[in-house]
Amino acid sequence: MKYIILNDNVLNMGLKPSELLVYATIMSLKDKVTGKTIASCRAIANYCGLSEKTTYIALNNLENKGLVRSKHRYNMDGNYIAKIYTIKKLVGKGFFKVDISALKSGLTPTAFMVYCFLCKSANVKNRKAVSSLNTISKKLNMAIKTVIKAIETLVYELLISKSNYIAKNGGFACNRFTILDSVVEDKEQKFYVVVKVCIKKVWVTLTKHKNNPIDLLSQYLYLKHID
View 1 (tube, rainbow, N blue to C red):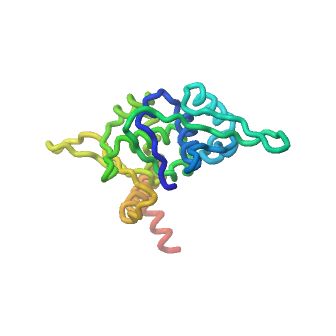
View 2: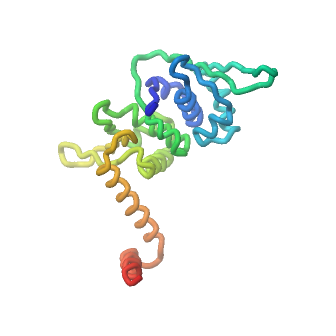
View 3: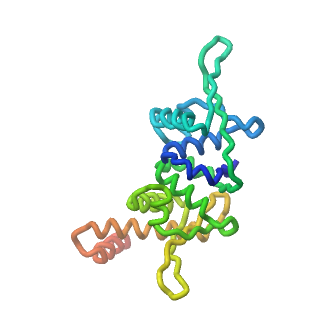
């Protein structure tokens, strides 16, 4: 399965970022026939990159909020084994898809929540979303600095690309985000993002130095040339 399908309302239920990440992980691990997920807390934690303690707390909170229901399982010897989770079907016809690779990228819970919001906001056909930082911040109840850091992470991980959306009057309106699905071999677009990220990282490193960034870059290129 390359995508998981989430109900639009999952972002309106006041979930913490870690709870959303664990919820999406359970969704991605569910059996196609039974619709149930058999997994231990450790397996879920390893899959989404959280600690076992954080995962355990998130699982309990999800159960208390009625989003999942768990049942203990035992082997023939009576020893406890992995739980079986049943996911509650949410009310609402709206759905959005999330690239399953986002769960395996080691994203922070906040970055994953921002990613889900952009996936929900994106146009179904071209996978583009237009949104301001303030809108994302308010909708997710998240500090703008946290949103900015999350977006930088998503761009770095090649899960999204970001550009400016220009209004008809020629002025800057807000941000345009494109969801970069891993299953789409858009090599030209991904190459552009990689180059852009690399240039930005080099520039940030140089500007932290006391000397002139241009002089440092020129010196570096010269040394590489004579080597």
